[in-house]
Amino acid sequence: MRVLLVLVLSCFVTACVTEDPTALDTDVFLRFASPDPVAVTMDRFEAIVRSQGLTVFARIDHAANAQAAGLALEANQVLIFGNPKAGTQLINVDADIGLDLPMRVLVRADGDGSVLLMHDPAAVATRFGIRTLDMLLGTMRETLRTMAKTATESA
Image (cartoon, rainbow, N blue to C red; front, side):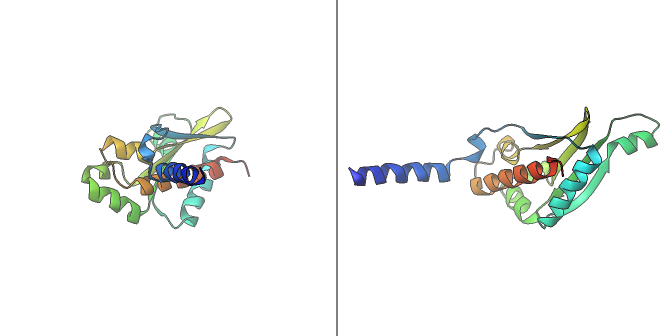
């Protein structure tokens, strides 16, 4: 009986470890509400990105660009960032995924606070038919969720 229990538990653990992260609650977006304004939330997220050793490629302020064009737009910023070691692995599987890399996060105004929004990397990989690199995608997803949760908590 004990051997059977150990065997069943081993199978369960193996299934959990090897489960395809693209099959898990694959929402297209990871979305987090923040009580803080756009600039504060984005500053916090960018600081976290840099502290993780990730590369910041650009920060785009859509509202400032709209204002420069004589138009009005609520606060809205995009941060383009990534990890070339992770991104390169994905691009080596399907070069077309480079269209969606590096990663981007949008922080936009929402009532008195803001919303942080990004594509789920597992959903992006699924869209490009990437069925390998499950561990990498799972790690990316969880790291991004942790970073976003930290950035959207009021200080």
